[in-house]
Amino acid sequence: MRILIGLLSLILFLAASAHAQTVHQSSGWLFLLNNTKISNKWGVYTDVQVRSADKWAEVRNFLFRPGITYYANSKNELTLGYALIQTFPHVEGSRDNLLTEHRIWEQYVYKHKTARTIIAQHRFRLEQRFIERSGRDQLFAQRFRYFTRFIIPLEKGAKNFEEGFFVALQNELFFNVQHKDELNHKLFDQNRAYIAAGYRANKHLDIEAGYLNQAIKGLNNNTSNNVVQLALYTKF
Image 1 (cartoon, helix red, strand yellow):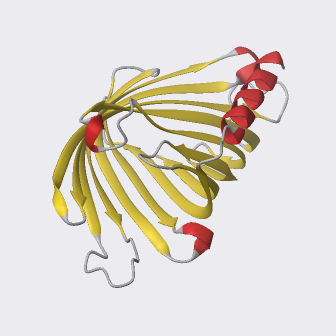
Image 2 (cartoon, rainbow, N blue to C red):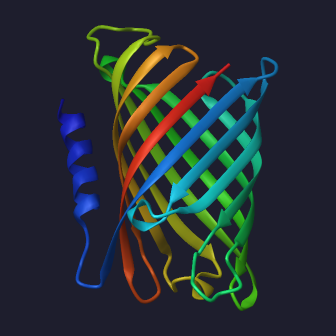
């Protein structure tokens, strides 16, 4: 219980950490994630996301992120992948109504169980970003991300959680590790704190709905984006 209280306190603190020069937004995100094993050691990773602009006005981002995963064992995974990110600025009078970013990415995931059957995941991801910019040359930059996630089954005493309701807590930190002077001049890029309620239909399917706070460190202004997220996780 102390661990849960501490995690909740951290998420609420990060979500509330805004100051005078912060732009507040609200949006909706749809998140679909699939992991499919094609053999005992290898699998396919697929991540698809659609994100709205401020006040749910229109679609702002589309993301497609496939990868190939190597399963070292039940706790350790390595993935190499590609990502396509399309941004639709919707700026009136601008000819650049579509900006495209390509990424190559590598990640390591460590999974384990804590006391009382809480399922924990730690993800370390490095991204090589090829960023299209309006009216400027393409930018190459690298970014490091650390993600941690906890699934807390609501059924007491469940040793192998395969069905039922749960609470999900997660946080992800983003750091600019190369060419930050072309971005926001800071090592810190953004933080995403998330809390959700979910239902595990079976060992292959999780459905989730929750609140995510995206705190972005900008060049001139910071952004606090309040996100309602609907997520679907499948595993085969």
